[in-house]
Length: 143
Image 1 (cartoon, rainbow, N blue to C red):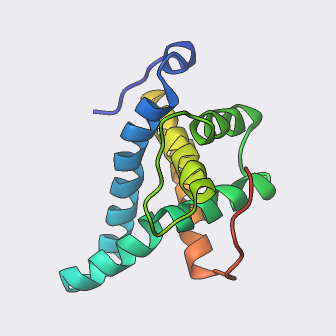
Image 2 (tube, rainbow, N blue to C red):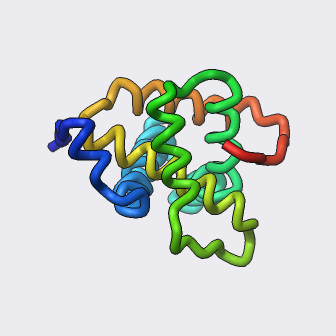
Image 3 (spheres, rainbow, N blue to C red):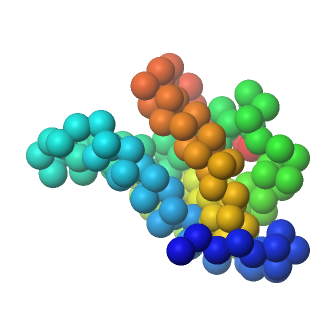
C-alpha cells in the first residue's frame, strides 16, 4: 500500500519522522534495483547496498541532485528541513555535514512516499543510481 497524503498534511510531520520513513523507502528502492540487476551471492548484494546507503554517498547524491536542477523548489525545501533538523548525531565514519545531508535526502524520500509521488521517487532514485555508475569522487558540500 502506497499512501496518498495531502502535501499540507505531510508537511506537518517532523523532518526526522519523514527521514525515518524515507530511510526504509530509499533502502527498498536500492535493494530492489540491486536484486533486479542479477541473482548474486548475498554478500555481494550487501556490499553494493552498503556502498550506496552510507551517509557519505547519500550526501553526495543530494548535492548532485540540487546542483543539477533535479529537484523542485518544494523538494529542495523538504531536503533542507531534513538537513537542518535538530537531534541528528553522525556515526564516527562520517562528518556531521554528510550525515545531515543524508538525513535531508531520506526526509525527501519519506515525504514523496507519504504524498504518493512515486513517479518523482522513481526519477530521483534512477538519477542517484546513475551517480554510482558514473561516480567522479567529488566531495559533498551544502544542499
